[in-house]
Image (cartoon, rainbow, N blue to C red; front, top):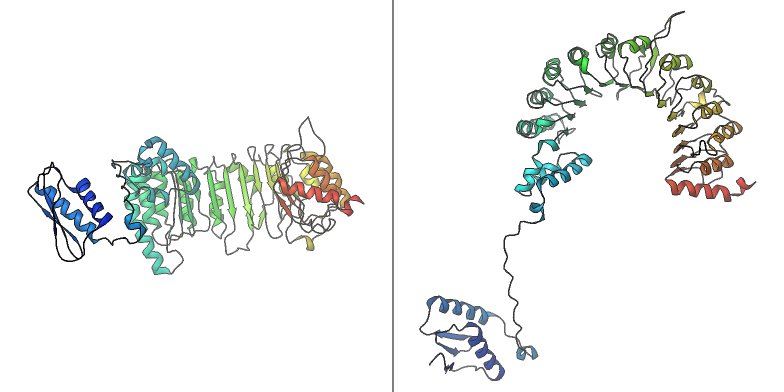
Length: 531
């Protein structure tokens, strides 16, 4: 048969035959789609399949046509109206070229900045480790040492037995042997938590590969040796902050570290124990003349032995102190003696925190010895200090106090509290106070009304700066609270729990501007406030 004449030859065999539309569709499908030009084919109709006999033509075209006919014949034949429907042409797939994706199209500098935002919020681990496995471009961005400046390391099996903890520490240490030289070259802040046996090995790696370290925190760590701290102080010349709270460290190791790195030390956090006296002795000897932050707190196992603190000697040894915290600590000031002159004070002190959950020995005289030379004080936390009176606070030299915490928690039932004097506090600092805590104090209704009236109205054309007020357990009245809320538009926190003079349903804490305004509406519409 001549191909150009497009004649079709059928050799019929016994069995079922193609008739009607099915025969015509099979012919058209073959000649229009599969038959290549310049070739001749014979079609055979058998019982179960359509056979194609290739004639002379290209070998590749014949093989390809045979494979397509075979796949077509193996498909189930439609029945009913669908059998007579014309088959829809299949859309040709679009050519798929190499698409690098949006991650590869972001410039490296922009990707590093995006990673930096995530690292600042959640830390570099485990995010950077996972991002490095996305693609080569992300791996390059996650490998930038600038993203590894603050790292917290904790064994994953901490607290699951001694053997499990040691095995986890060794496994993490093996990873650090590669991470330290390749990622931590610009490390500045390092925190180790729950390390029991491999602290010395980790600090050795830090000493070798992290010369820019400025802050080191060891929390619940054991086996911290003297040699490890001394060698770290010698290798890291920018190290100026050390946090050893809740860790088992010998006092000799801390003293040796302070003697080596003392001239550049800025911040120090310690847990009070029987060895704290030796460390304080080094501070009193002016080994850290530039110290700015000193925090001393009790550990999980509370030590009932009072700490004897020489206030005047501490003022001479740490003259640049800006933050002093003695948290939940039972301490006694060393007697100064009769006729003894006051010390130099802390001229740069901005924060003093003497908060305690138990009765302490802080009095007006002790507070005066601490703050007589501190005119720049901004935060004063005296929670639990029941011996402090408003008259003693009025005589302090600080005139721009922003946060004052005088709350008493669990000690008010055993002490005779002052009924008057709160007016002295608000009249002195009403123009600068942002946070005021009087919870548990025994001031009368009239005294509190006069004290909080200092926040009414504007001063110099501006509203009061008060944004947090804690009156839990006081005798404040509804009319006084309404006046305070109306006069302080920036009030965002108001605690009225256990206030016996307020209507029922309103004795709770209010957080946010909407809740505070809702409290004002309820107070103005309640029958007790109207009367």
